[in-house]
Length: 227
Ligand SMILES: O=C(CO)[C@H](O)[C@H](O)COP(=O)(O)O
Image (tube, rainbow, N blue to C red; front, side):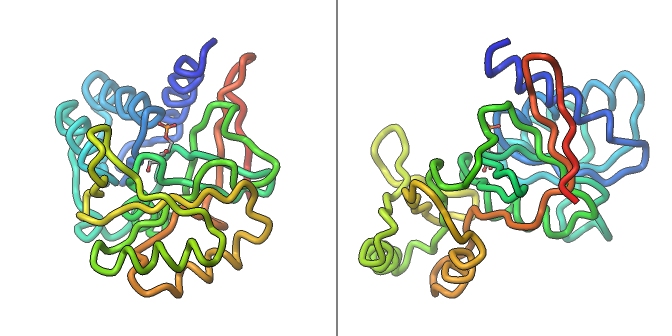
């Protein structure tokens, strides 16, 4: 199986955890796209009765087209389960997310969910986080100052750009600065530092968040429990 087939495998598999009457957080990305397709199939064919809470405009569009009823995070009393992708997961189940620039809403939905499940192909599992550039969402005003500070602190920042060369804007009209760190030895310390920077809206370190990981492997999906 190639990477895309592994993503499809875990995307479909994850929907087995969705039950009638659940409020389900719907992540963002190419793996999640397969999950939302399968959820849409169950809503249509099995009359599965759920409410989705999306984490990006892209996922909201797909879910709407598939007939999945949606509410915003502020309109629901709770979220039973959020299913999302990840860019890296370390052996101690810490994660980097935001490769698809949806980290802000993903973190809001994740922190308001009773359970979080991540679906990944096996290439996303790492010993230590950091090979994947860490996304940091920043308010445009003052973003050059934050960038300069990151550079002075040796965090190797780059502004994320669109294909046409312009700066990428998130769904909340912010910029993304990617930090090219190589390895992150102390993720909690780095998260604390980033949380304190004025102008930083959110960062892609998702620490102590995930409960269940489904890994797409050549011999089938593997379910890992984090806690
Ligand atoms: O965090 C994310 C988007 O902000 C995605 O979940 C992450 O980038 C994984 O994406 P993909 O499933 O396409 O590999």
